[in-house]
Image 1 (cartoon, rainbow, N blue to C red):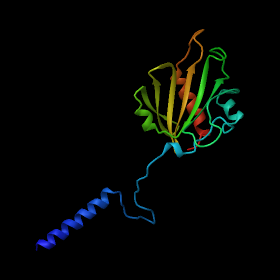
Image 2 (image 1 turned 90 degrees about the vertical axis):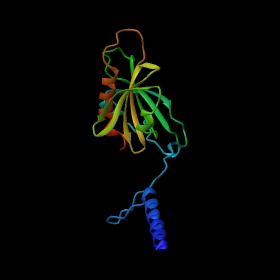
Image 3 (image 1 turned 135 degrees about the vertical axis):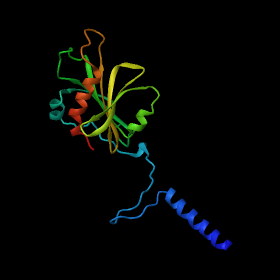
Length: 188
């Protein structure tokens, strides 16, 4: 009798361990659940700096292709960030007073939410993608709209470049407008 109880305990323990390890049954030929470790430093991210966003696309969303500024775009190899900025075509705030950046990264929305220097203003949806609107504590002249992507996330950053003249308009609303316009041109 005692050996039956021990065998039951061993079998139940093995079943519980398998369940906790993420083993699942196959349904219609699909594999069970698996656990993978993401390594942001090995993911090839979309490059907004090298023609992936055409001049036509940039103009259609209100950015001047001739004003591209490269923040980070290593010439070779994998990079966890690729970032370029453009000045808007709309000059009602003064030409060169604002810049709009497209930040492409292998880091995730969850990682962004965990940043200590981030002030999350609100959750949002960029077209169909979950996202958030935020500012960095040490950069009051910029606002970010971050949204999910298979590679990690994209961030659209609108910022004031000049302290001269009036600052008309809400940077976060501007970032949301640009994010919604750019999102269809960025990879899922």
